[in-house]
Image (cartoon, rainbow, N blue to C red; front, side, top):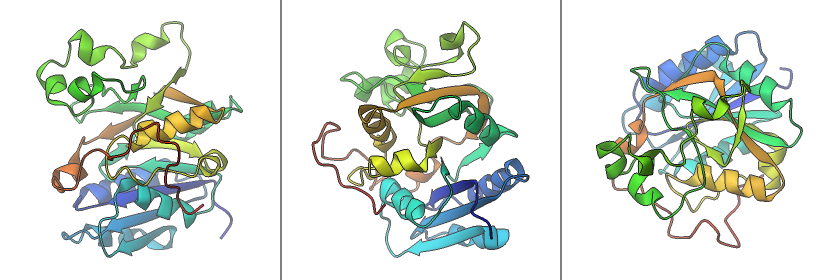
Length: 262
């Protein structure tokens, strides 16, 4: 098989039939592209990992004996794929037609752009806050999954560092941001390798913000592309593993993060 143009990598943990819908949306969106996908199943107990095998040779499956977390699973998948562009996507996130092409075309406009993220919608069509400024002390109270954000979603504190269409008032197709959600992001493999991939000390949550921070420190920038769209069932995997989710015990500005096997 020819070297694919896009490698799609997913980490699955008890997502049930959501994985099938996600893989089908990928197959539909990339129908005219040479692509590959690798699903890393983190010891699911619901049999959902086997859904990957329904899609034939283009989608491969790695079964882990234990739940190794999101960042380590993504690093594992990236190391086993080859395309210059890597689409990192959650197994509860479906692409809307044209998403990957739009992301890739926008990224190619900027040589120092390492990573792009689409507009993310809730299933009811409302826009998620998937592109943001760097976390700060208030993020723990008003971040993506915090209680106060759910209680006061329209407050100034909840919205203060969320990038939405309002940031594109001059008609630009994309805008530079600090970070985008790891639920769906397209990354240059070369840039990902330059920073060693995800910091594996983050088991679940904040590894996306940390990755974007390190890419920016390396001289790259990150863009939000609202003309590309994906629909995300927020928190599906984390709801199945409440005892294992949470923050890494090491701060984001640690000097020597654990690197992936690139």
